[in-house]
Amino acid sequence: MFKKFFIAGVIIACFVVGIFHKVRIRSVEGNDRDVIKTDIDDIKKSTSISKITGDLSPNYASRITNAKPEMIILHHTICNTASSAVDWFKEQNSKISAHFVIGKDGAITYMVPIEKSAWHAGLSYIRVPYSEAKLQSSKNLINYFKESSDQDIQLNVAKLLGECGNQHFTDQQKEMMREVLLSDEAYIINLKREDTIELAFLNDYSIGIELVNTGNEPYPNEQMLSAAHLISYLMNRFQIKKNMIFSHFEIGTIEYDDGLENYILRKPDPSKYLDWEYLEKNGIGIHQGNHISASSLGRLLYKYGDNTGEIINLKRRLNNIGYKIEPFIGQKAEINFPEDDIEYTSAFDDKLALVILQFSSRYLPKNFRKDLPYTRLEIYDVLPQSAVDALKNAILSLVDTFIDQIPLQKREKYQSVINSNMSNFFENAMETINSYYQGNLRYKLGYHSTWNHNLKNPILSNLKNLIQELDDKELSDLYSRFGFDDKFSEKFSVFYTLIGKEFQNQFHKEFMPKIRSIGWSELQEESLKYVEDELLKYKNS
Image 1 (tube, rainbow, N blue to C red):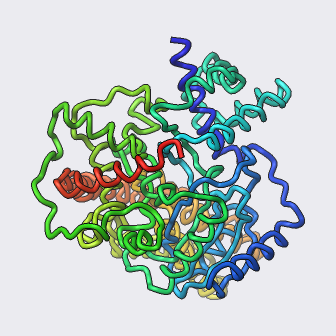
Image 2: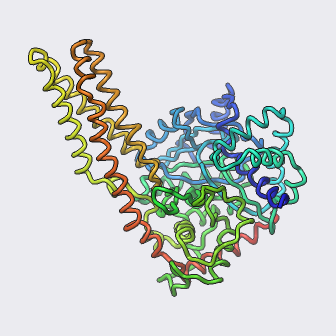
Image 3: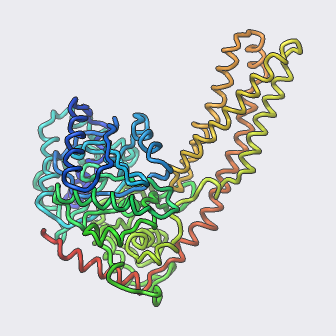
């Protein structure tokens, strides 16, 4: 039992690496801009890339393992312009960044020094071929803890566990995890399984590249050309093998959402439209699209609801090529890691359906990928414009009612100022809401709190500030007596409830049925066998 826990703890030592940037101190070295400039000169010299500039993000840290990056993770920005993505990554409060942003015109913005850790992968998982380099990288993590004082270790482990969801661990478990982090023997014995290791929270192991794309459009040729040149350069510079090129949606793990009473797929990028065939033709990534000609998916082998021992084998095979079959967060909010300790069920359930969507979005030929369901719900899928207009009208009507309480001799003076201010502020707040949905919504009901943070609370603060700026005590007293905050909260609560209900309705009646309909076909089986055969070339390499 103790040894089994050590196995889990050792792998936890790997997965805490990627979130350690939130608890370790990031020293922004004065020469990081010079490093970026030097790298840009080398990129221009070594490739045909000419449109590349540097723009340092504040959101990065040293790689705690002090190792070279071993994989590349591709994303799309959701926003439609490179400038929007760059501005967001330069916002310190965003806590998000990538090493590179590639615009639709192929222009590249270099934002985090390659040998530092950018914050792009989030809650993530991959199983990869074992190598001495990865073992040494993770040994460096162990040495970090061994060289720290006991007090510092306890503090950092507590913070690390807090980032993972501190409520999931007892004090005894926390102490055992601390001991595991100091155990060389457990680490070395239990790190590998059949020449593979499991890694999670992949920021410390990876380079992040964002391609400007909304997610529902093809990637322009100029952009794909720049991406291919840049990725090839990085692969050559750091000896990154072609099997270590991943999409965010396939390393982004599945979570359980209590509000939806279901499992959810968190990441939609870089979308089914990314041209993996083009990349593979240029020696980047594994894909069979250039090697087969299929006119149909073929016979359906397994479908949602099936229950057979062969499905257990399918789950194992999908995990062996990298996919997390069982989520980190289960229905009882338990950390489900490592995968080696999990006994798979024989059910074709929602978790497997979501993994098959991840696999299919990456490995099916492009003429089949285009017909796959979207891996996200858009704002107006769950909220019609009429509902937004109704909320705005309700707010402005409440403002008019408040204005009617102002003494007649002052009413005209304040009416246009207050109405104009509130109308403009609502529109600006809705732009923020739209940006949030475009960038961060991952079907998680809890994310709807953004309406409180970005609409309700700012609107109330804005009106209060306006009243204060008008510097009229009678007006301020009237505002307090009127109870605007409570009245506004009541109207907003009705609207907020509507969002949640409509979101749940769309998720259960529209989104999940589409995911469940995918199934496992002969073409997917052929694609999986191709990937398995290709990955055999990288065992022990």
